[in-house]
Image 1 (cartoon, helix red, strand yellow):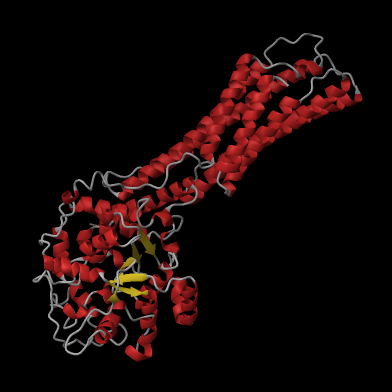
Image 2 (tube, helix red, strand yellow; image 1 turned 180 degrees about the vertical axis):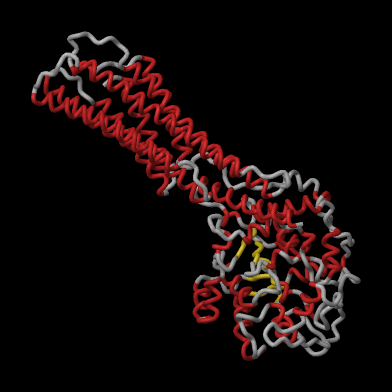
Length: 637
């Protein structure tokens, strides 16, 4: 065995181990590529160990090994086209349009016929050699001519396959180009750019590998059989016709390009899910988000520290939920009563002492802060906390357990050591007696959407009766007394907890109506946590709601159209105060989209598909759906 062949085998062994066993993801779409590597390695081994035909027996062995090598090579060629076809079918099913996979299937059948013809001819020759039957003088030249035509034909088919993939994926890339109405800094623009980059890399890898097989395959075919054949040349010498130095160089170049392209086709070197990052935002914070205009007095700081030292343990939250019916709120319906109902009819009454009232929560700094809306079922809030303390990101199973077998849920949480984990929940940790207990705020104009929301909030979700009000003597503090107010300090409380509590996190409990993303205080809390680098965890009813491969684009449409100016607040002065902190609304909206969608934001682990090409095709499909919907809305206007 020559030194160059030994080096070649060692190189293939190392590459086989690194790529097939370590780098290629274990997915069905990667299996054709894995088999291609196996076939290439087996073919290389056969080429190295093939004996020189010094006698008839060695000639038979060498020819049989050659036939085996041809079978392996044919298998590799067909698998290569299967790999291309499978990726195009994957993109077609995700994108919803034809890209050319059927044409690749036809080319694969043609390559199979051509490669099989060489195997059949070689088997005939093997039979002649075994029987020691003489063959005509013209047979050797005819055989060489057949090899040339067949090799060039297969190379031509690979070139056509490369062009088909280029055209098909170019259509997908073009579809991911955003219209001029999409702002450059928005998430829509960022995801479209990511989809184009991902698809472009796969397209270029497939085109390069196909053209490499085509061009270099042609050169190797012509180089291997370019010499003039003597009239007395026997079939064994035809088999041993050496490849020229140019052919060897071509093989090396072809192998290198092919292997690199196969790695890209298998999912390596592809860009990750897009992220919209801050641009030196820490140094320029006031350009987007002003600090609260109120001076930080000693009274203000004391109130911040007082708020930060309140929390609810998971055990206390489960106990409270268990006592709602029939003790505290006899008509409590877990499927219909909202957090607002529970605050008005359970938290406020049970947190009143005699003449005054206090916050329901107990002293103690929390491990996590919950961002939630009062418009969702209280059951879902409790279930989201129960799921989050177990590091789960969907709360439908916990909701079912709370309804069917709450003691079993509590027992499992106790076994996992979760019951003493503490949460900051505004409904419990804010002293409602110092703010809202005595009324519902001024009524908006009759007949407006704001009035309908205000009226719904002051009524029981089940009975429709107006909530009772509290007549305690606790002094109320709103925006007119900012130092004592407990409703305007969320950013300072989060900053203090982030500084003093190790591994402090934010939990966003997303209600089924996604109202948490329409409430201005919730959105401001999410942005503030993202800005300060507080780890954020998103807990949904079901993860299917944000699956990138899903057909429901409700969440995606809502987030990409998001603007904080469209968020609502129970008190108009709260919205005015938060909007006053923002100097550039558009920039703030883009940064909030980053908080929701980017790799360190909320939805990253849900939106990122396992296969980059699959995710890119689905991304392009839903981007087009959103763009078409926006165009239709503009035309109707």
